[in-house]
Image (cartoon, rainbow over all chains, first blue to last red; front, side):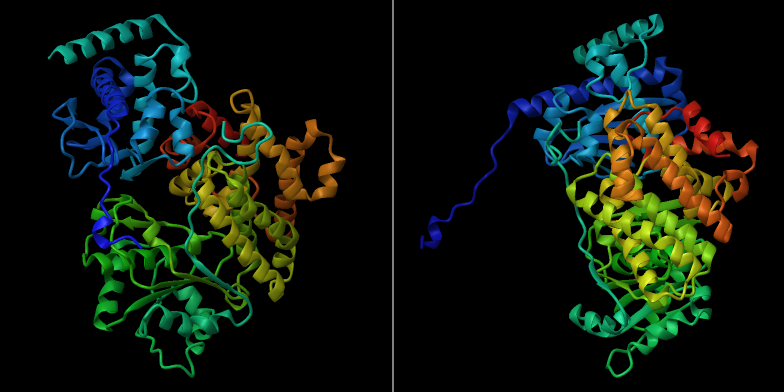
Length: 177
Length: 406
């Protein structure tokens, strides 16, 4: 048997690329949600039905996260803050799972069906958040890509195209800022 | 795609259940031993008046005779809709009587209340609201045994508790693997006194659990094994359980079926049937088993109608025929007709139960008025079960299902 001193701890390696992709995705989703609240009446209606100071977080266990906060008539993307408590937290169990979803290799519904993702916190608002995420993903992504992320992609309309352009401009502005 | 073509294993799945199951005649008599194995000597029994008046607690108390395990207290005033107020009352009794473990005896309400008491005691709090939601609990719970007195909910093996908070006017939902009891005890004596209509409603509740688990989006080989076993037990026993409630073998079979269905659906999840049934219960107080029984065929028809979006679900409904009707009917039915035949068989079971004990087969027969359908549909859209539906469900589609079932 090896000597006790020969047993070394193993520090986990980093998954830089996967983490970077996930952070970028979180930024897009966060800015997309913030913009959707302003331009999409369905999203506004959903968010307005939540209590004041409602917080929603998307995160990877032991990895990146992003926080959204409803406060004083706005729905703000607060970026990667240290989160002690969020009313609802959607967590991926591992950065690899998040990366597979972000790159379209597992659809979001399948990630849920597989249990690669879980919700921590109040279940009362989960469906409302999922509906908002669906709208945001159709704003961010062309329909042929969006079908990897949501169950049913709505038809493309002129209004949607305009909203998509506004969302991209806001994301660009947010990135520069 | 959950199951790849010609591959019977999903590309990824998880299955969890840690409950020890004790099933059989005189199964209650193992309680003192099981408690001692868990290091407990002084349990509190949580039940409701109906169970106590039916004399069922006597069976539990008698099972302690000849041992040195003392029952710290019996709380038999759990209301039909459990609340945080009752949970705190029971926790006070638990502390005053220096109890060290919990035994729940009853249906969904008594079991959910006991789960709530376990949270309050373990977390040393009187405010359940702080722990509401998914995965909010971290500490290992007190030893917990569940003895169901209905054969339907499967609560003895599920990790969910629903407790009302009348002050804030919310139904608090708690889900955590820590809420699972250590032991579930199925003893036919505990379900023998169930009247025929409740036997039918709870049996169809279990049947719905197993059907939705079998076509569920998190289905996997283990949940399928439990779901199909449950369906076959129910198919073979539900009518006799209603007509001959004193038959111990049949009662034990139905109790096992409900447990198996609970194991299946808590891992495979449920969908549109449960979402609309929860909403019908919330808005019009339709008992959960009855709502499930009514809405099951309509939910399946909805999935068949959307088979272009989820062809696999239709295939699962076709295979369902093997388990709801048996292999003879399955092979005699042409493949193209199997999905519709599955639904027809389910309708024939509920139709027979209606003749035997008056089980409602339409929402209008269960106290739902037409003007409430819209609010039920809206409520259903916010039900968590819909996130596991294989297809997107719109308000109009939910309303159409409800109108068809009305």
